[in-house]
Image 1 (cartoon, rainbow, N blue to C red):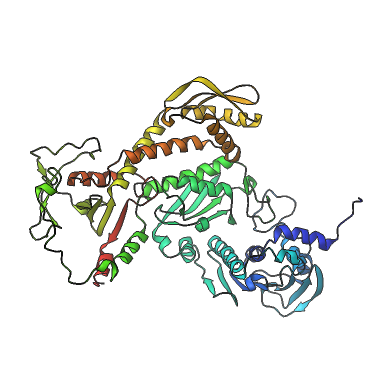
Image 2 (image 1 turned 60 degrees about the horizontal axis):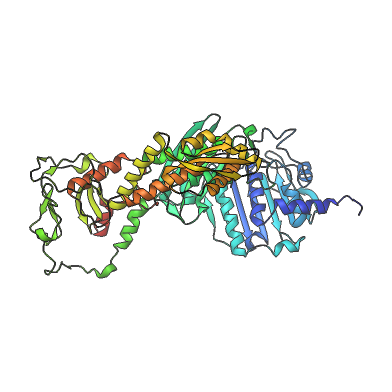
Length: 614
C-alpha cells in the first residue's frame, strides 16, 4: 500500500480527537486563550450542554485581521518561539482553534485595544467561509456551534446535555480558583447563571465561592518551600471531607492540572485521618522553574511531568502533614451544624415541658463504678439522676490505660478544679452513655468520643516509636528468592538501606532476582513475594518506597484500636481531663485512625440558637 499525504482537513480532525474530546475541552481551550490575552472579565454561554452553542467573550488584548487568519491555522501561536523550556502561558501548541474549526462551525470577532475597528472570521468543517472587517468591542468573542457536526461518530460518545454542561461548569470553577482577579460569568439556556466576582488577591474568598462558605472556617493555610519548588494553598481539616475527589484542585505555575502524582500525594498526606470512601478538600498551587516541569505531555495539557517527582511528592505530603499537625486536630464546623439539625424541633419525640420520669433509676453506690467520683464530682440534689455539682478535683499526671484500672486510693489530696478557660478542649463535666465525655470550654462545649480519642493517642505514640529507631526484624530460616525484571531489582536495591531501616533486608541475587533475608517483626507472617512486588511497582511509579511504612502504620493502627479505652468504660473525672489534655498535645487527635472525628464542638451561640435566644 502506497504512503500518501493526508489532507489538511483530515489532519486537523485527527488532532481534534486528542485536543477536543468534549464541549468542556473546547471551553477550556477558549478560556485559556482569553486568560493569556490578559482578560479580567470572561463570560461563557452554552446551549445543549455546549454541543449546540459555546460562546466565550473576553475583554482581553484582542486580535487584528491578520492575526485571525493565522489563528485558525495549525501550529500558529504568539506564545512561544523556539523552545519549550520556558512556557509561562496556558496555551502554546497552536492547535485549539484549528481543531475546533475542523469539527464545528467557528466564528471569531475581535478588536485590538486602541484599534478603530475589529474583524471577523468564520470557519466550518475546516474551511474558511469569510474574513472581513466587523464592528466589535475591544476583546474577543469566540462562538462555536454544532460541535462535532463534521465528525458525527464523536457525538455518539458524548454524555447527556446535563452531564456535558456540568463538565463545563467544573472547568470554569478550576479556572476561577486559579485566577481570582478575573470575573467569570457562566450562563445559557441549559443552566442557571453562575457568577464568580473577582476577589483580587484574596484567594481564600475565591475558594469560598467555589467550595462553599464553610471552607474558609475549615481550611489550613499552606506555605512551604523545598529546594526550587514552592507550595501554597489551603488544606481542609480531615473532618471536613467529601464523598469524592472532585473538591481537590491542583495548579502548577497557575495551570489547572489533574496530575496523578499530586492526587496521590494528597491521598498520602491524609492517610490515617480520612475514613475509607471519603476524600479531603484541598487547593494546592505549585510554583517552580518552567524548565523543571514538562507541560507538553498531552495535547489537553492537563497532565504534567516533573523532573524530580520525589521532591514534589515529598513537599506536598510533608507540608500538608505539618499543617495538620499544627492545627488540623480541630473539629470541622460542619459537625456543629449536623448536631443542630439533629436537635431540631420534633425529633426523637421531644416535647416542650417534658421532664424525666420519677421512675428513673436513682443513683446509688451499687449502680456506679467503684469509687467513680470520690475525688471529683458528687451528685446534685436537684438533678433527678442526671447532673453533677463540682467540688475540688484530684490531680492526675497521666491517662489510665486499659491495663491500669486500679481503684482510686482511699484518700486523695484535693486540688483546685480545672477551669475551662485554661484549655482549648475545656474541663470535663460529665460522661454520657459510658463513652462520651462532655467538657465545658470558654465559648461552648465539646463532646468527645473517648474510645476514638484514646485510639488516636495510642496510635501516635506507636507511630513515634516506629520512626524513632530501626525496627526489629525477624530472620527467615531460608531466604526467599523472588524473580523480578532486572530494572525492578535495580530500583529495589537503590532503596535497600531505607527498607532495612523498616526491618526488611533485601540483597541482590543475580541479575533478575532479589533475596529477602529479614522481614519486619511487627508484621508477623509476611507474604514476602507480594510485598516485594508491590514495593517494586510503587518505586517504579512514584520513586518512593512508602508502601512498607504504610503497612507498618496500618498494623500500628490496628494494635492501637485494640489497646485503647473501650466504649462502655466509666472514667473518673481525672481520667477524662487527662484524656483531654493529651488530645490537646497530640497532633491529629481531632480524628481517629479510621478518619472519624474524635470530638464535636458546639459554640455557645449554637446552643442559644437551639433555645431561640439568638
